[in-house]
Length: 396
Ligand code: AAL
Image (cartoon, rainbow, N blue to C red):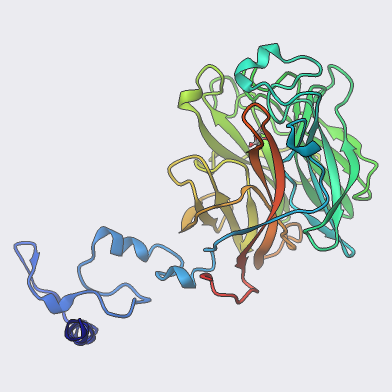
């Protein structure tokens, strides 16, 4: 073993001298032209396999050096009651937390119903008190924390409006924007039990002078649906605003082949809608969908562009991607055990930064906690090192 190790070191050292490889009939005959012992930073001038070629498409060939790579660890939150896990209380799809003075605020979907959800495939049996899905018959609640681990639930921020107003059936999946000293909540507004004809809903906005409210209704259907036959027809989910280039960039999700009729062909795309004012009008980017993998939206200012965490769906599920223009994303890393509905604490999400710094923690949700038939979701915290200001090694 020792001799072979020695030989490898000697061979590798020689190979670093970067001689031209000799190729005869497509066979490399000079075995000294093997890949260098130390992983190169620059692409070596030798014949490369497809995998070796690809490693130079990433921000750095060594994943340890890649600032857009991280592992994730998870922590339980204190302060939320779940009725002993009987499925009648659920919290999911948190907004990104924001820091106001010395207090973190978060908004989320809360369901408190007499029974657990009966399932999207039985949506026709849902009633005014029986939910179809985990996000049916919900309101938007909020909580505060000093440390991001122990939270105090403060109460409802946006409740379902009266019947037939947009969102009367359920309001869910909020996210926050801070713009010119005002707070804007973007959220999904359902007019029927989710699952009846699909997961169909537009986006509404409410705004307030204080994160404690009161919230004033600011508009419905703010992100226009696609036309019939288009990818985002009747579904605009997971609205997530950031400030970029002096404008409001809202990333949102829609599902192709809407369920329940075509669930087996289900796929997810993300679009971008841009506005000068939080209340709109919003113009959709002509290259939508800008992302063809992922599920809930997680986009953040990173250096001069925008980075995203794509989870759960699509060929590029479990990747972090980057786009200088916020539109044309390229894979920067592959990641695992990623947070669902990840809502990072991004200190510069709304500052129109040209040097986005990333984040080290956030909230996410964990679905289908509890026994089958009593499914509900819980909120949790994740920690990671996706910040340029954080020096911990990527591998622990
Ligand atoms: C989530 C989100 C949206 C969907 C539903 C609740 O994962 O994508 O919010 O509508 O599921």
